[in-house]
Image 1: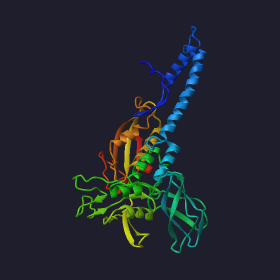
Image 2: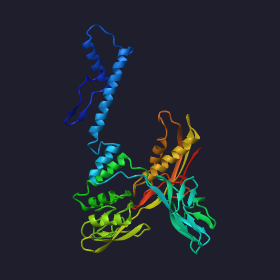
Image 3: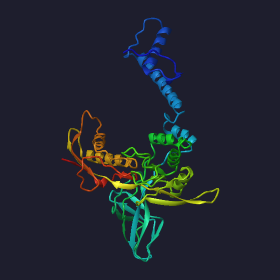
Length: 414
């Protein structure tokens, strides 16, 4: 196949910026060289002159690519990195930085003991910091919030953060987390930021529901939020909006909106719902453990309105997978598969179904080359209990979200 002829960079009405290929630049430079030196000259790929021309062509091509990056930086759909950070500011949003996992921690010991800058290590080796000063009350124990010292989605199941490793003092005798940690988040990726930018421009939209979702998406610290699941019976509305006069498929009350939000402060979320919800709808807090009711004061009238919304309920997913090692397999492969499954589960959105077949794809993604597989999967079972036996998709309620914890993912070689 012949190489297209060299053309100078130009802006096409439909294609945008058009650049010459690297090979066409080389061909054009050789053509110009022969025009300057019309005598017969050999410029094969094995000559020093050809190598020199190819070096010049590469520099030109690199500059063209830089031009392309600058051209693409004008749109949030094609901008990357720092350019994307700059352009989304026009919508009043910014890239979400990495956040830290948090967990409740019950501290026990002698009443009156003051713990300064306490550190506790979990079973995976991650360090968690107590508040600067914790004083054990007369009851002998107190529950406080702790924060992981490593950013990102660090998982910790209940009873796994127990080793006193810093700030130890006489009188501090025990520590344990009564429930699983709420995982933090890594730095927001370009694709995630683009998706959030697309939602942000829906803020002045024609529908109040779209405006409400866009306002929630723009709240600092918000990581995930439900966008609505249609009922199987095709009834009006979705798991978020019930426009009917009766209880809907999801059990939501008449003429209500049921917002499910992860992250952000309670007041910020409630204020966004209050400002965008429209006239009259009941803001449903549901009746589960994540129910939240927050009073919001209207800055113009002073009227106080209680806004209800839902925090997601985390549902641990258990996976048991047996693989058969092939050429290139090592014990590290098991860890890679487990980590990939944990990442997949923690990437699912609120209310999103856990697809059984996806585990095969996720496990296979750790192989460098699928044409030269390192392992085959001999069995796979998933479920909501420590002894999973299911081979079907796992459906979740609209306010639930799958949670991947390393200890719940068992990957072994058969």
